[in-house]
Length: 560
Image (tube, rainbow, N blue to C red):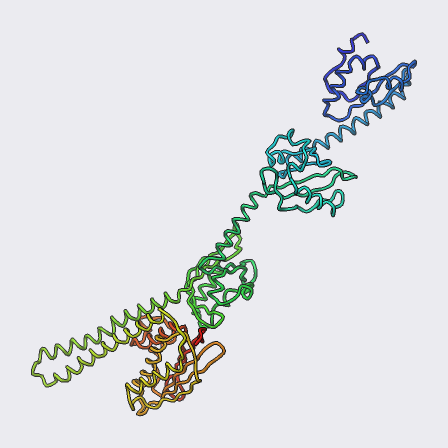
């Protein structure tokens, strides 16, 4: 060749380098630089020697850096078939090398694109990091390569190594949690897999769980807020048959008197007693069936049988367009409902009873005024006095009721119901004398309850009503007190005409409406007094005639 060796060398890519000894030595620097910077896989190098020179001797005399470049040596002259065979073998080596290089590059590109951080470690030294690892550790790739993995994972590296002891080579470990990076203390999860036949290298997949921890902490905050909320909260699974409860908070347990373990998996209708209004239950079922929100007040029952009014807000929870859950908010509005009912009754009494009595007073007073010499003045005066006394009695009833309610709210002490009833019977006899009739009693020695004034007021009213409304010459009143496992039951039965159906609404808990109300205030006051004492009142007609009022009160929890 007439071209100087240095001019024949090119930077253009090639697949095989064929060079003789003089040229190899001449362009050694360029060739070494090219091979060192080559990133396209292994390039075979064929060294051509003359017949007078041993190939092995020639290669042995070359510098080490050049010897590492030589793939094969041929001696000229050489048959064409043998040369062709040698070149085909070298091209095969080159092709396999390029395929391996392409495969590795694809693997590297995949690793670089993986959202999780990937690090390859050999003998605790970092050999490879992808882009996500650079971002996670907040260092450049060059700063990370060659460093000890302990500088990044600290003592947690020992946990990772321990997890590999139970995993075969090539088998990934489960993600380990509770690991933090050094020095920025980023919470991460790490899975590891041993590479190669010996497992000297370890690939680490590292997930930044900062946002996950923040979400979990936020969920824990929401859960604590729900658990400790002062309003009852329920969540049901709308995807399951019968819409079962999957969550209840502490306040709901308190409101219902039931433990979460006893009600999870049940439908919320378990809180509804049979006497819950059918129309309200129907509206609630319809809203649930249609996946719609609803607000209503519904009668519920605690585990001990106590009834309470629940202001219920139910809202559907959708995921995209799929109905997943219902969330319910429950608030005890029994006291509020009772107050509203008391106001309604008092309003009706003031408007109706007072107006009627005042009309009587005004009418008869006008007769007296217009006819001063009328012989019926005495009759008119008696009517005026009667109406005035009725108003006075009504006012006194309201005053006594208010005093009793106020006393019970101030404090509740253990009192012997037997002693209270005996005292009220004596008061009755002192007030009515022989007209009080015959009072038959059946009492235990003692029966303690946590109330005094309100229940005393109710007993007094019931005994008085049994006498004043009796149509018997000698009224008969039977009063019994019985103890059960958890309650005290007081029953007052008379042989009078009974309470008219129109008046019974005051005792059995019906709402006050224009077409559904008792004519007076007394029965309402009795019912409210019993409720204030924490009791339940039921009414039945006595046999063969008369009234039977049953009051169930909780036993005292205090020492007598």
